[in-house]
Structure formats: structure tokens, C-alpha cells
Image 1 (cartoon, rainbow, N blue to C red):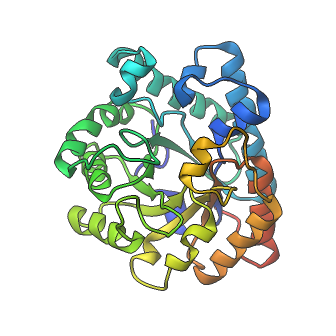
Image 2: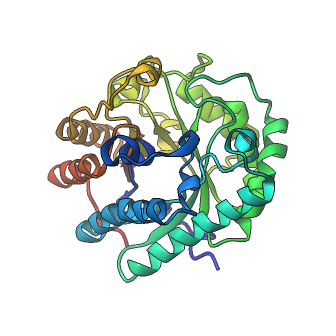
Length: 319
């Protein structure tokens, strides 16, 4: 049974950590191929599954050592029907992948039980390219589309779902409506361009307000991911919409999405500097309490983030 589905502990305070750029870390730092950038394809392979376990174990160790809670993601970002043809998987195989991914997370949580809360978070990716949306997706269409994957996840031990690297508010609205219908708590994490706006030009504040207005505030909280802090820090302000943001999972690199797509090598940025930038964000937005990293980031970056927050008094053990 889900442990926290009806009372998410990260909403009650305390510092929670998350992982980093799983795919980029495994591909570039560990030489593990990931077919179509879909990490769930590693689950049936002994070597791939072991790599996923090692990856998450490092972050769970860090959370235990620091007293932080942990939001444990599942490798389900591309485990939905939009990618079925590219992956050569049918709906039954995708459903099995979602169930297996939650099973892996559940087994990892059992190994680290006894400390701060570990929340199993089923990750939902957008339809199409997260960096370059193919088209505008109406909310009603998105609601009907995501109902399938959410239906699979509702019967698992997942405590919540997060729309990660979403790039348009209408698609996010559909996901929130579908999650509400499936009785699943949902977070939305937007990605922005170097100007702090979504790819269609909508500001972050406008996007968050649009989702809340269309769903009666149905989102548990919002996040920003897959962009460097320099890309969105100036867009943040002390406003009601900004107080809906609880989490940051920034890229390690200052490169634009287009530059990252074209780069032949990983740009890990400066882990220490990234930690300092997170501490500065927390000083401006002390209600932030969920911290991880994204593309180019790995355990080094999240370790530096946790250390920087502790140094400035922005770290509170989770209960």
C-alpha cells in the first residue's frame, strides 16, 4: 500500500533531497547506454538494474547521513504511450515497466527505512521533446492521454506523481486533472529557457497561475528543473505564485537547451558553485525545501547543495 499518498511529508516542512541527472550521469560518467534516453529500458537487464540501484543508493546514503527526507523518483519519465513506437513497446509492456519501476523504488525504500521519510514519486514526462515542444497540447487532450499511465500507477505503491520537465501550462493542467481523478497527489516541475520563460514565451508566474486557476489549486506544489539557476533566478519574486514553488532541480550547466542538445560531451559545471547558488535561492525563498539536480548533475552536486544549505542554516532535518 502507498505510505504517504494521503499525507505528503514534504508539505509539513523539513529538508528533502532528490537525485540528479540520472540519464546523463549513467551515460556520460558510467558508460551505460540508455535506449532512447528511456531509463525504464534498463530494468529488465541485470547490469542496467544494478546500475540504477547503485545510482539511487548514493543519494539515499546522503539523505540518511544528513537527516534529510528523500523524494525517490521512479524511472518512468518516458514509460508512456507517446514513446511506444520508438521503444518498440506496447501498452502491456509499458504498464509492466511502470509497475517494475515502482517496485524497484519500493525495494530501495525498504533498505533505507528507519530514518527520515522516503517518498516514492512516479515521474511523468511530457509528450514530445521536453526542450522543443512539437505542438500546443490542449488540457482536455492531455487529461485523457495521461489517464492511462496514471491508472497504471494508481494501483502501485507510488505515493505521488510529478510532471517533470513540463514545458507548457495546458499540458500540465491536463496532467493535474488526470491525477486528481486518479486520487494521486501531483507536483508540476516546469523547465524554462535562458530568459526564465517557458518555450512558448509564457512566464513562470503566468504558467503556475494558469495551472492553479484551471485546477482549483489541485497541484500539491510546483518545481523548476532542467535549467541553470542563472536562467530563472531573476524571474522569481516574493509573490503568491512563487510561494507555490517548493523544489529546485537545476542543471549543472549554464548552456541553453539547444546548446546542450548539440554538445558532444557532458558539461558538469561547478558543483561547489551550484551549491552556493542554491543557498542564495533559499535565502530569497526560505519556503523551498526540496533540492536535487538535473542534466549534468550527479551525487557530487547534490552533496554540495546539501552542504551549502547546512552552512547558511537552510537545512532542517525531516521528520
